[in-house]
Length: 346
Image (cartoon, rainbow, N blue to C red):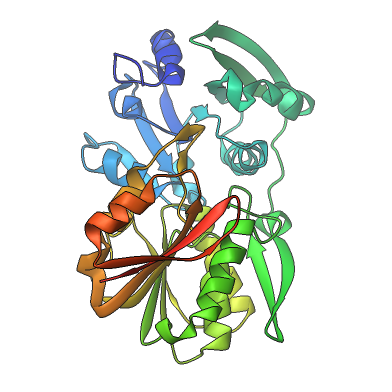
């Protein structure tokens, strides 16, 4: 992040502050800083699809409406005439979010889309050209800022955005459902598969209650719920699409569980016998260890006596030392050239 404290995308928006001062603005997309609280505008509504972003902005909202949800409700758009959209890390996520935002923005709204060039923001031109007039109005800080004026509203039907695929594990047929922006949306990723197999080989640690941190589309918990129906399951994630995808996956497989929005342990108060995770190590395009460091350091306070933390990580990531410093004993219970599964004992 640059010296001003704002990301390059927000610095580009700052250059055009005069566009917004008399407008009612919705800010959405991949918000990475506090510029939405600082922007000068008549009214500002902020939609967060990430819970940690929502917590940070809502704690110092300065009277601005900050919402965390999959989709904003219709009231959120009332009297608004401008949208600022931060382009996310994947095109499919951008298509999904822009589709529901542009369907609901009032006619003749001004739409501004900003993003770093390396995230592929340029593809917004092809994405929106059939629906109105789009032009690049600034290029700085290795970012592009685009203005779009819609001639017609984009159609949006949530049911059309779901993807699903089937897994067969120990004779159980499992349907995984997911929305754009969820990690490993189209199939079981190699890390989760290694973690899942390792857990099933060490089934003695699966007892009482299990917490799945960074649950994604709910694959790990759904498999555990199908194979061990007496286990009490809690799933958590910061992503609104992950939370809704996990709920859909669980429902599709008739598995009962609690699904919670939480920034690692921020909104989790129970103690668990087992905490499992295939944690992210990226925040946008950057490598970030913040969430995993919190997961490892704080896990002991959320584990029962004789509890375990079991996580999978890329082999090159420096977790062994942190785990050794935090837990009584740590084993690598499965590994490939790319991944390691760690089992830590309290």
